[in-house]
Figure: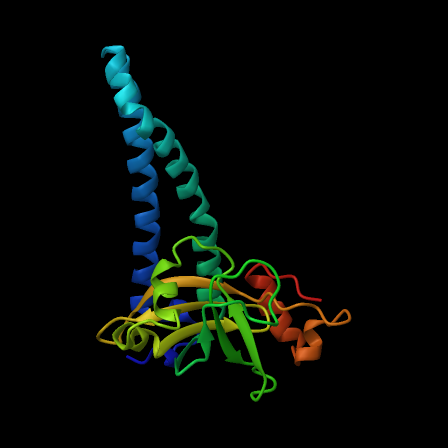
Length: 217
């Protein structure tokens, strides 16, 4: 089952299963941290004050974790939009790096370069724009990463348009399903008011970008 044979990545059954698992883990994390916080709060009302002080670190950290769990849902929903709009591409030897890319502005925690669909010789960087859940990728993008780790991203699955946004994944050992889904963003500096049409984006390309929440000029 070649994932690139499907009209969209969402049409690929193992991809749907991977995304559903991703959402389930988000929900379980939210329920677990919030539930633990509520349970300990209830227990603390029936215990001596010294027990409350033992629980205090968890009260603060648990509240923080609940807030973080909420932040995972927006990227997951954007993943869904991308999967429903673009097909998978299975790519080998994609240029990548961990340091700051010279053409990118704003926060970045690693990057991959993909060919512009309109001008294949032009490479456009997409970056991890936030650090949440990027540790797996960053360990493999590191210049001194062991060859065994580097080999795990020698082949990547990509859905999206590098002029707008994309979703990257590493294949499972069998190569039949994606794992480590991660949204990557287009954050290149605007040169003299450059519009996406200068990258060869057609009205149809721009409309697909709008479907995933990008509003290109």
